[in-house]
Amino acid sequence: MIEGLNKQFENRVRLGIMALLMVRDKVEFLTFKEELEISDGNLASHMSALEKNEYVRVLKDFVGKKTRTRYEATQVGRLEFEKHIRALETMIQGMK
Image (tube, rainbow, N blue to C red; front, side, top):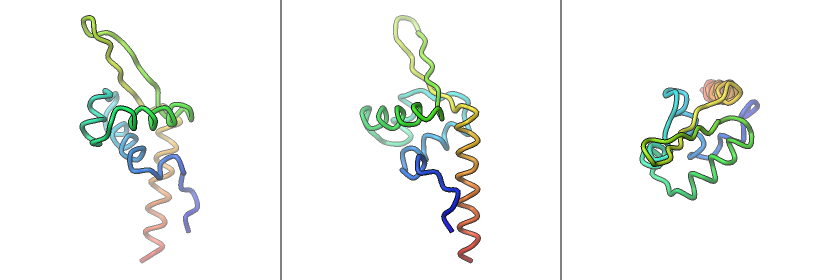
């Protein structure tokens, strides 16, 4: 019944990260913090895990003299997240 779910997306923070990245091309670190209401350290930890699995890509550039950190979902990340969502939908449909 829970076949096809991806353990990387079981956590609410990672689910939120990927959901934001599915609807927005690039998202800044601060935007994630505000939208998901989490600390810098918590966000950084989850981002590192998603980056390690090649689900997200880090983009760094400068705005004036300040570093801007943004993230985007990789093609692999998008595909894996879509599979996860389909598996959730299948599981829910099977419970009716």
